[in-house]
Image (cartoon, rainbow, N blue to C red; front, top):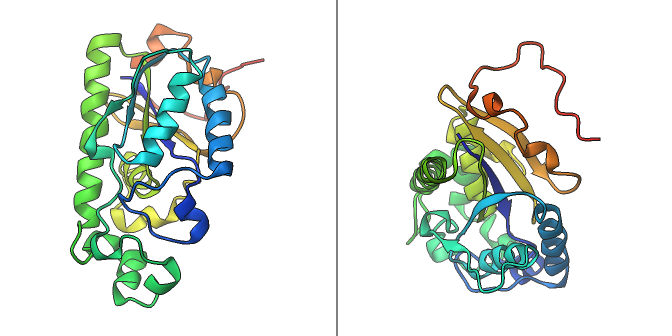
Amino acid sequence: MPTVLLLRHGRSTANTAGILAGDLPVPLDELGERQVAAVAARLAALPLAAIVTSPVRRCRQTAEAVLAARDADGDKPLIDARFAEAGYGDWTGRPIGELTDDPMWRVVQRHPSAAVFPGGEAMAAMAARCVAGVRDWDAKIAAEHGPDALWVACSHADVIKAVTADALGLHLDQFQRIVVEPASLTVIRYTETRPFLLRVNDVGGDLSGLVPTDPVEATNSDAVVGGGAGRVTT
């Protein structure tokens, strides 16, 4: 099955202000724009079959930068609302420092599968929709481009953490152990037997090793006992 590169948006003005942005149309800040330019340059050489994004502004900006670095004039990223930020409801737009005093904060930290944001979405529902979105796109891209295809899903930290936890077979209550920084890549290859987590919170370095070099590799779902030799890229 294909390999998905889960890309978090670059740093936003809400991140620097300490505000929980949710679905607010906040833009990238200056550092975020530089982060996005750097990751777009890293992705430019990869044969990406599709770039799918959350509809939220900071993700669209990030996905559009990835396309621009590929000289894809006139192309637009594909938008899927299943990759949107968690619906934080009444928490949206509030300072993080203020939210830490809310009793729901402890639930989000310790038992996120039970968390339902006031006036918003349950974290379990967010996890279910984004995992379904990734798996649906993965199957679609496999059918159209083959099992060795690579594609990008540009989304948000909690969304990417939820998809990663699912790939690792972790309960949602463990997903807060995963770190996803701005403009980072978390890479998962799905197979018939299991997903393989290839990279997590990757913020630099060569990506050429993600391209399968052996047709058998793209469809093999066996784990390498002993870890194997890895991919030689130099």
